[in-house]
Image 1 (cartoon, rainbow, N blue to C red):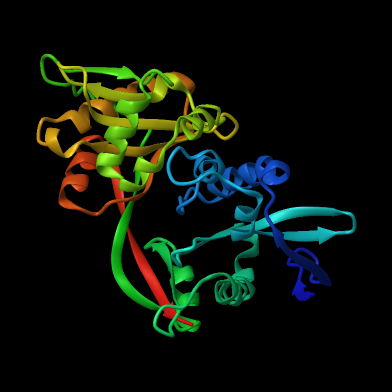
Image 2 (cartoon, rainbow, N blue to C red):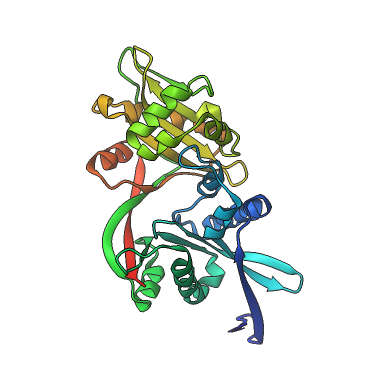
Length: 321
């Protein structure tokens, strides 16, 4: 029980919060709507949009999703009789990073969430050298989040990544690939081998991709094969890629993943394929176009600046528990 005061009539009321495991098949739709509502109310992006959450199960790289993976995600609900409403969603990863997505009307709940995540981490993560480090990425605009973390003993380790948002009033970019190179959509399963090769050249864990995982990915609600794009070389090799994932309910779109094969960098292929993705997604009337947790390298910064994305620093807050 958490005792709180209702501002409208100054009556003291009891609000009961419940924390439970996320179950993808039963909870995804409600969680997706929650993430969309938080953005609508705040106008701010954290690090998770609905396609990020769906990718936990439908992602094409890594290993297949199992029911045990649900345990890493927690739902916080406000319970009123037999009814309940999601007010927060937390995600813990096996490498010790976590995220807190919280409804603006329940911001103070973070005082309960932080120790709960620390307890979860102690239970689920393995210690290394008798220590256990956990951390959370926080955009600089989330000032209150940073203050809470300070109170709980977290240290600011500096800028780790960037959040990128493309404003609606910015015209679509018009970059094109060099002569002889073409931008086209991926055709699975026919393109599987080249698709896996180009993704794993940038993201090594994508070497684990199988045809079965690629098929699961292509069945995701955010997936549209018209928006899964590559640049093909004159000798029909894949040289760069981007997928524009757009959630069909909230219309929130993200460019993820993005990359260029090391052998073909410096040719403007990343700009060309991303520009094509941005142009194509316009007909689906996206509510936003984002790249959340974007790399802070010089090359990534130049790329996303050229495509008209704003930049917000994301700091990494860390604690030994």
